[in-house]
Image 1 (spheres, protein in one colour):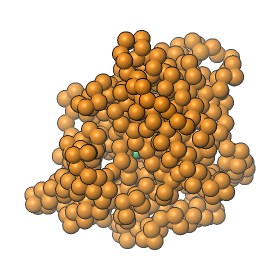
Image 2 (cartoon, protein in one colour; image 1 turned 60 degrees about the vertical axis):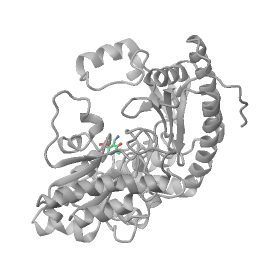
Image 3 (cartoon, rainbow, N blue to C red; image 1 turned 30 degrees about the vertical axis):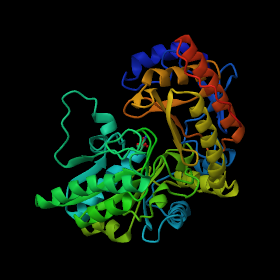
Length: 455
Ligand code: PMP
């Protein structure tokens, strides 16, 4: 039994048998989480923590309907996907129904990394090109191919040299990027940043090659909760396609209604990708992911004589999890809920920003938000120290789990399970207010402006 071990004993065992590269949250004071339900985590002594960051437990931790669907199917059959079973076919049909019509073929895999890796492979077969364009600070996975296209993971490595086929375009970050607001309007930013990608695509073509794949999250997560400017993807897709390439929307963090206005975040940009990769949230914690593409692109494998088999991908239990998640999403109208709670949360965070000069920027769509900490608002100097102190205080004192993201580790990320409520949002904002005031007063910094807050 896990509970036989003390926290210290677990840490010791980890030190001995788990690689030090597998890091922990709050490593100086780690939590032993023994139970989870809805948007809450529980430690052994029964303490309840509000989880503001787990977008894998999409419809709530251990949702009873998902648990029942998985348990029932696992007790019946979980075997080779070369046998016929309705779940895989039904699940593919249900996912395809949420996509633009052209995206009707689903490859089931086990992780977002695998989905992106498979897209790289399919794109090479379909286009016969190798060059890939990505956005700076992006994260797309943990395999050898996907770490190569994840500046988030390779930027800080000493002596790292990107393979020649990888091209990194500037991050379209309106707050911290090479073009910024309010100097440029959102639409203008979209065009300026798109031109940066187009330049790379044209260069690849002019050098006598072609683009294989352009890959981007529909709004960037690990890169710092950054939203693509309006009208960015349309000209990017045109330029990439003109250079012979395909376009992928990585929706591993952003899909399944999280952004509120749309089921998929790419819909905000009014584009139709050639690939969509999905993972994390679709199984509510059960490992399942998928690559969705067009029949024409999927044929690239069959035409090359490639049989695609994946031992666990799309097994009846994994697909039962996805189908149950989709039922719960629909029945609970969770996309609409994410929109309403997200708008309220954003409003309250913007009020908090007025009060605390340490908050440089607040941004969000649905239940996907970021709070960017700065040491100088005008110069937008990133403030990792304050960001870390806030999340540490929020966890230790207020039992609220947050985390930091972005190239400077100064963006507090918020992407909770979709059942998160307005009361939860109030609690987070009120306690962040208290924490920031405490941190700043301990440094004797007059950070709090005399401005009232409303709910
Ligand atoms: N793409 C994105 C945008 C991600 O955030 C992640 C995981 N954080 C992945 C791909 C990789 O997914 P997985 O960890 O399931 O391999």
